[in-house]
Amino acid sequence: MGQVLWRVVRNQQLQQQYSEQCFLQQEREQGRRMGPPLSEPLQQRRTPQCQVPGSDISHLLRVRRGKEEQGFIDLEMLPPELSITILSYLNATDLCLASCVWQDLGSDEYLWQGLCKSTWGHCSIYNRRLPYGFSYRKLYMELDEGSLTFNANPQEGISYFMFRGILLDHPKEIAKFIFYTRMLNWKMLRNYLDERRDVLDELVTLHNFSNQFLPNALRDFFRHIHAPEERGEYLETLITKFSHRFCACNPTLVREVGLSPDAVYVLCYSLILLSIDLTSPHVKNKMSKREFIRNTRRAAQNISEDFVGHLYDNIYLIGHVAA
Image (cartoon, rainbow, N blue to C red; front, side):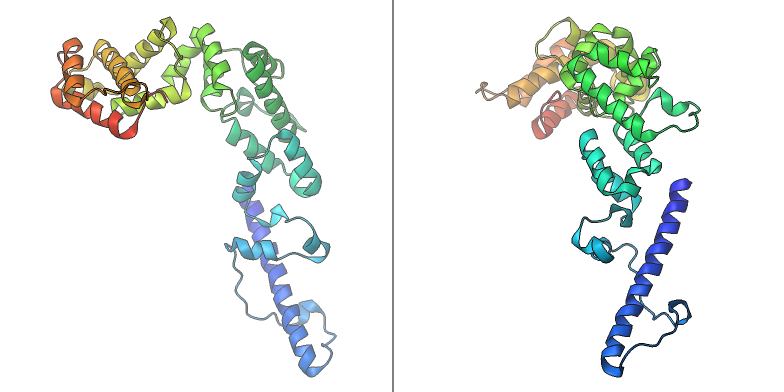
């Protein structure tokens, strides 16, 4: 609600500034032809009819006043959504430098709140009653520091978030933080989840595979939980958890196609092997569709030939499921 009111007030200010500039420009043109302008107050003069291009970003970038013509573009003149998008590409150090240039923008708590929630989608502190004087700018710096710490040592990073009161010491809260955060190193994250299976269980339940085709759901799963580079116990655990979750999200498909967690488990391994076979430059003799159907139906006899054929087509057209 605060952002909406701020946007309305800001648009009114832009309209007034632009109207004044249009009037001054018209006065200068009349002054050249007719002599010096009248000495009436600006408020008493009739403002000329001129259209205010509220959505014309290029116009907003051109409209500057006084010394600002020689300096930086004022991000305050842009819509808040665009300002947040621009600043989201900066790290904490660059944001501090930017806030020195755009001082009013650097003290805008709505902006820092948007930057926090767009980068770290879930934190336990978001759901608490914030104390008086709470600063989202300070929270952004702490989240950035904690993420860098996590990327060096996952255990220390999570401990940092808990010590600062950003995260609660609960597997579900940690899983939500990981699921909605795009600042964590995937290799360190993989090592952390291999050690914290309770967090891994909660992270799997956050995925919704309803009405998704099996290879697409597997890609979505490995996009959040990266597969290990070698086959082992951790990969088997991931595929087992994925198989149960996929069946739980698609009960209709389970009845119609005859899928079960064991059948999905077999199909997932078949898809991974097929992905390697079709995408690896070291494999010269690629597996054909007929060979894939024959080999897969030997292990999963209840699955129809058409369904397995569609699996092959998906990998052939889209690519690796764990890329």
